[in-house]
Image (cartoon, rainbow, N blue to C red; front, side, top):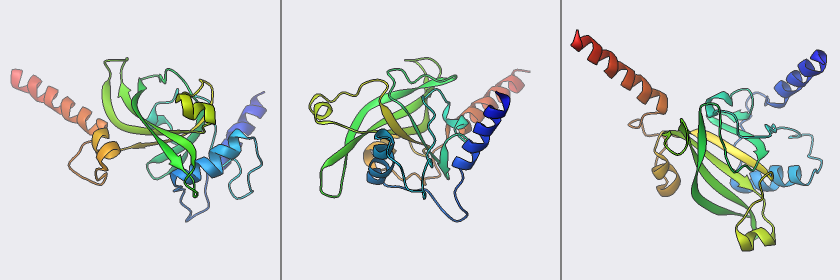
Length: 204
């Protein structure tokens, strides 16, 4: 069993590596049409990107733990998982922003849907919001288009990244993610820690 597990871990490691100089930067349409749809249909992908995006089965991973598990391109992580009612991790949860928009094909037809979520530290519903953002892609049938529902357990493809802007700017108004004035969650935590240490020092 140990040899099998080690082999699987090695295979996973190979699956996550791209050739030098290559970058994985697909559009919404490409993610749905060339990755999610073939995976859903159990179709054979071309050798160029067979098994390129790993299947993590669930959303039970904190976003900062995706490195080495999901396919990465800079600060963006890609992986397959399953639709879940509660996306709870060890240290927090993904909150649905009730923002869902269609993904269109070349002919203008709807080929999928994209849902937006943000990661919160702590227990729902009072967790602290972070700058981690997820776009969750799923396929749609005519029934789902009419009822705007997706069954739990359905295959989804997720894109996760840490935005430099608040989710209101980056998802709604197309805010500039290269802005240097916004702080990440870890920056804010270190600032709060420094303030606590200053208070302790002044108290002495």
